[in-house]
Length: 451
Image 1 (spheres, rainbow, N blue to C red):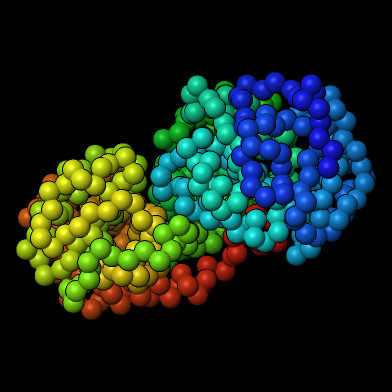
Image 2 (cartoon, helix red, strand yellow):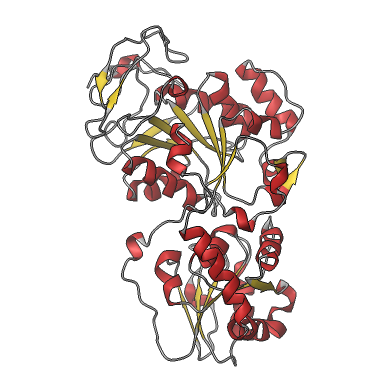
């Protein structure tokens, strides 16, 4: 493997540190900006278009040409994945650009893991708070240190530099980062936007409404001016430029499917396995059904909401297991006799023991419960959660209790979804749909261009 000497490393607006596991990339903690990189472990043969000469953005180091087996010792000559017929024996270099938004983490990490297991060279680029999660799944990680994570112009510049430094063939971007989507378009990389919320049910002017939480059209256009791209009239235009828009939810849970654009691909939930929680067991077991209470992992004022659920279920004929978010001490809660509180446990470890779920209707929890055929009581706390709760009701898999009514109504709601068979039957239908992959598109193939 040829590695550019540190003296040739170009400065960028962001200090990026590579965390890597295994044979790909460089040592942990080394600044990463080079015209060469390699991977000693990825398999496959790759043909390179001899006419495709290019240089890294911002670098005077020329690329070389040639062919190589797999990623081993690959020279900096880039190939465009859109010009290849991707097959099982091709190793594709993929950069995943993300942020720490709670519910977006699970599908992004799981997608990166699947791509790595499929033999592709995957690097993720995002905040330091996610480095350990990607590292646990042996995905190389580059830390983005930004004064303002959501400054669209800075994000565009940093994303463009990271794409060049990674020699990425394909770029995967969280759809709530339209400036990063535009950066990939500006340097002619195939880009896949990952939608980790509902899509059709949230469409506003052609784009899911959470996109507007990240930037405005004016902010995006300022970034696009920096990139040399034309102005857009809507945030949706950034999605229209993508090769694919990957929606990581069951199509059966969404709505308004007839208005999706031709590049939309429903791949179903990308659910993490139990990972470090493999072998977890509930703290107490008896014949009463177990109700899991999961109200999110990012700060949303959950402490009073969780306490209200505990108080409301104190006399119910159930066991209650509440999971405290990482930022909350489990010891702050007053527990009734039928309840316990633990720290965060991955859904794949805890859901097999549950009979029903009380959630904030965050989409990650909603689809995890449906993937296990569990009826739900949704207590939406904000963001797009009321729309997710409405989707659960629409498919018949649960009911909604407003946060202000939890103490008075939560027990009756939980008993209702446990005792009326139609709720579990509806959840089971979604479980079969998720497990049967009826969406028709494979997430790995969507990224590599084969699907």
